[in-house]
Length: 493
Ligand code: IMP
Image (cartoon, rainbow, N blue to C red):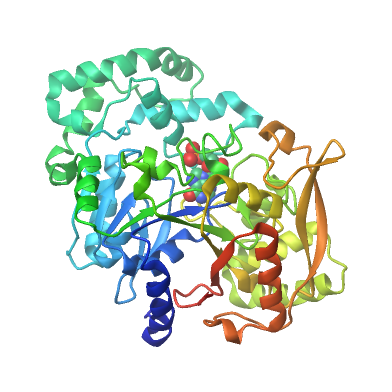
């Protein structure tokens, strides 16, 4: 996909002015991930020199584009790689060295061998095959209550780090003897679990020994050496030089381990404050936050989702069973047309509404390919997410998905045990299952706004919809996504 320079430069010019007063920008997700942060980062990155990841690991998947329009999917390396920006993988990031090297190789191919400076923190927790085994075990013992993780070892990486028994990236360079010693502590702690797993046939083959794991990690040393750094110091120096920095969030507030829907969360701090935790930069460096929210939020894996249209498991299964609706263009178009008529005739059930938006939005996970469940716009959740993340602006992605819908239910409040909660109040995750959403019917618009790239071209009722949403959440919607292309975006002044 080649960028349309005319369109991009229009958005770019406005953004340059808007972003200029703020040296460092934090971009985070406001729902449960998959908000399209990659697209927003892709757009704002031109205005920054250094791009930084501060949490999560290979569970993330951001699609971005090089300056000549080539697609690049980044999991571990900051998206800034695509546009040749300096890339810093902060200490809060969880590192799988195999995947890091794979991503590096693939990126080299796309970028014609030219890579910008990339820094990998010497003290980030490092993945071993034991992390994968422990994750499989935890999901197994949870049984029906499993989290539905991405299988990238994220929980064990963060958890064992907090237990102070994790190997760190830089320790691979201490020599085999010392590394084996460090790994022995982890191995001894986990061995009873592995033996139990073996007895239950959950492990095929042998359990890797500390020497096996050390050998695996040592094999990476020559390739990763050029990237190892004290990234906190690198960022401190960048700050001293007044370089403009973009902090790229992964996952989203609903998956933050402290302020998300625990235990159905990822294990790091994906909230905006995670930028300080995961980089070691003082708070005053974070000038402004942009929170990306999906017009219709989605969730994969398990956990509370008060505005969900349908049942999670059924919504996920629907994608698997009806993959043709997602991959066959004609089938998809026919299905959408027929379903939209039913929705506008007020004859569609919530399950059918969910199916419509799942197909329309191609709601399948970038990292796992799993089907995503869709929810209604959820103002109480957004108000909470704004309270915790403190964004100056919102980026509302996939707004075009509402095109043609005459009336849309919007969640404007939560009731718990018959009592309406105050704006910004969120029940505990175990009470969230009991929440009764309060709906309003908001009028939509009939025009297709796909690909609209300036505010004046939006239909009057689409503008009114945005203003109504802004009024409810009390935050300016700066960016509005209107399509899958990088240029399909409206910048609102
Ligand atoms: P983990 O991060 O692999 O441990 O998964 C924990 C929960 O977070 C699961 O429900 C995952 O589906 C969800 N999750 C993790 N990363 C992402 C993401 O990038 N997008 C959406 N959901 C995610």
